[in-house]
Amino acid sequence: MVIIAVDNLLAQHLHVNTRARFKGQLDSAQNWSVRVTGDFMIIMNNQLALPVIVRHPQRFNDSRSFMAAFKRQFLALLELAPIPHAKISLIRNAQFATVSFENGINREADRYLQNYANLLNDHNGVIDWSKQPSNAELALQLAEETWKKDPVSGERLPIMDFFEDYAMINFHLPAHPNFNEHNRAYLYRSSSLNDIMNAVAVNQQFLTDYRRLLDRHGKSDQIIDRDVDVAADYCSFCEANGISPLDDLALPYYYLLHYNERQDENISDTALKGIATGLREFARFMRAQHLFNDDDFSQFNQAVVQGWDALHSQRRTYRLRQLFRRLQLQFDRQQQNVRRPLDMARQTFHVRVELADYRPQMWREFEVSGDTRLDKFCFQVLTLFNARGNHLFDLWAGKTGYQLPFLDSGYEETASLTKHWLGEFQPGDQLILNYDFGDSWKFTIQLQAAAGRPRRSNGDRATLLAGFGRGIIEDIGGPSGLTQAAKDDLTVNQPLDVATVQEDWGPAIAALQRHYE
Image (tube, rainbow, N blue to C red; front, side):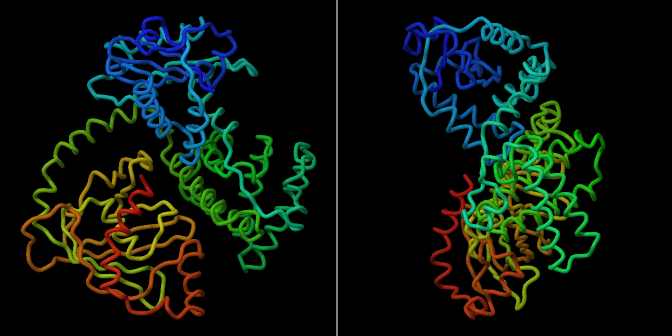
């Protein structure tokens, strides 16, 4: 149960239960305290002192409207915080399972709330108000100014470090392999895994089998040594946290995020890419041994990609000072983009898309308006090739990458798919759409000028012209897996039924878009 303790005035405003509760209930990490200061409402996790900011509290005349706003801002905070996106739903569900409002805030919580109130009200302080920070950015800025003493080590740590440990220790994404004799040999389901000596022995057998598999696949000695070294270091990282590689599928994110700190060095991009590749090979071995199913394999690889992005950027995504530097540029760009779609509606592209690294050539051709937003354009392409939306994707134009907002890595050269349109490009430009970073589906997109100009557009107009091949098959191993499947299924390589696909295209795009919302 989540208990939200409020001060007297707010308690009366929200009509909360004012019965006395014993102090222990308000100290739990599952419980929160609330205070209003000016135009801000501060909701704080009692044990971690993690703040959530909601503006204009006068709007909330009952507890339901307050909870709805609080949940939205808490989720926005999680999206910026240093945790894998896959764990956000786990944390959300745990924090909001049951909510109880109580009158009375303990002394320690009151001290933290007062400190946050002072920081918010000091317009000459640490917050750069000229950058118009969002609620989540404000919360992270306050968290950067808050430190707590670790009860075990005695070390003073930032609040966000406490929260990262909380997310890592309390919320796992475990794999669920079939329990058979082969898996039992690894003892992953044995309670004796709590014994470090047994965990070391299990991991050693695990690495031995991994090396044998790589050798059977004809890998070079150099590649085998690299991949086994990555797996061994990852297993040691798991042991240090008291868990096995099957206990948390999001652990590669933390492994990569803190790699420099553990090795006490700044890893090169080339070495980092090798480590990420080694982790993906490790996941393929897990799937081959039936220790990962397809969903586990996808979750593990998504954690690798997100960790790679976080480490590659050389900063954690919650470092707001760097976000603030970009905020004004983003705001200016958005202002410039307000009228762009109206001008782009007069432009139409003839688009040819080909699936890379596959023979015979699998392709689509269609016409689409220039005022099509890039996320919608990606959905159009993916649905034409039967992608179900189970994996991440990004779009590249030269050295500039475009991603969905919740996946924005923070690089200067990346941009949001929802803030750009197809009409920003020119006929003759080539784009690359990458889908499923494990199976590595790659679509090469060639933009050409189309004859004629539309009289009006709402950014949704697209007409399929021609194509060949049925499309991709999810989780089959990429183009090489599709090549093998086509040998048994002759319908994979056949001309496209344009009329049928056009009829189903719109609903398919809408369904895929909902999948990523």
